[in-house]
Image 1 (cartoon, each protein chain N blue to C red):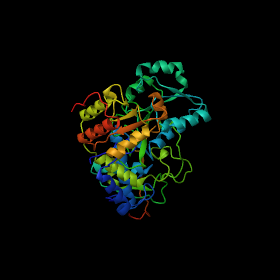
Image 2: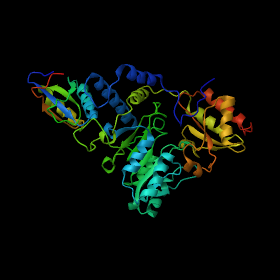
Image 3: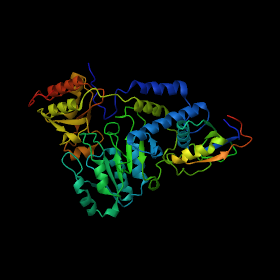
Image 4: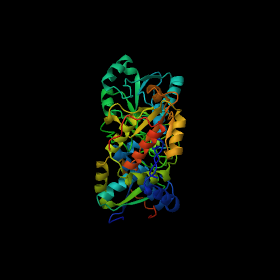
Length: 386
Length: 82
């Protein structure tokens, strides 16, 4: 049986073998703290952790790596921005495809701080209409818009948002980009695009372990830390340091995870399928009868994640059949993104999501299409082109 | 390590700064060593970089060129060699 794991949007698998080796090396051989002590073992840990930071900065095309702070995950990174900015009484604009990592803290801010949440103009697939942004902001009074939040890549339909163009349209209005799905998958010049904040996780397309992630911070002075605690620096002071990255790195980082993430960044695999293989798969799925496909309207805006909504079957039962009959591992439901499913008209039942990794071969994609065809009832309009 | 005229310590704000400083010096071929910060020195973090006195100007120029915040301080006489 080939690679039947299609839940990489939840967490990626497999990882490069070097990831586990690096983590085991830390646990069995290296040990020691980060940023707390100054003997040989601790110095080695510091070098390795900072090497991971440098690799992330290079990937994001950020010149000053101190602007890349480690977080436990993208959710913590997003919360750092949403709760660290002074948004009381202001408006936050969001794309229609935002994840609960964005919407839940915003809901709390609405209840407690009088934040207004409004949607950016978008097409039926959730792609933000950049040409309408200025008009939208004008309706809210530019000075009252405290933040715009956009998911770079939807975890439901795989739409890739034009974040550089969005930032250009926003001007000096701060933009937080949720890169949880895109980081490691969609190349992005974070600094060159003028993004103010970029949140990412290590355990999806970066192919690192869970418990790692980070935040690029351009506007550090406007942001209060989410947590206060020990940083290993300025220990004589009870105030959090004002310099980066320590200001946003209270507590012991996930050292073993950062060893693994560093190894993942150093050993990225070459894809085992082509872009055309994926587009052929998607074309085949879109032609299937019995399911509606949630994906980008234009292939150029499509990442290798999409969802299917069965028209004559329960979503959970559909996903269960895929697994029991074909071993296809996929997530069924609302994907922690009810806001997105409402926009895509798949709420409240959700969809079955398929998300690829570099480790899928063309044959794996053929097998997936065969499985979907069978479970959808065998009704199809035509064969996918190979 | 101390060279002809004694040693200097480069003091940084953070562990990130120390490692960035070490990388900068190694890339320019400068001998250096990470050492514990002496108790007598009020420091931002627990590590410092020890460097020969006759190399300090060149080292500081490179570190500042890379916009890494640090200051140099002559190693206290009582500081034990690491």
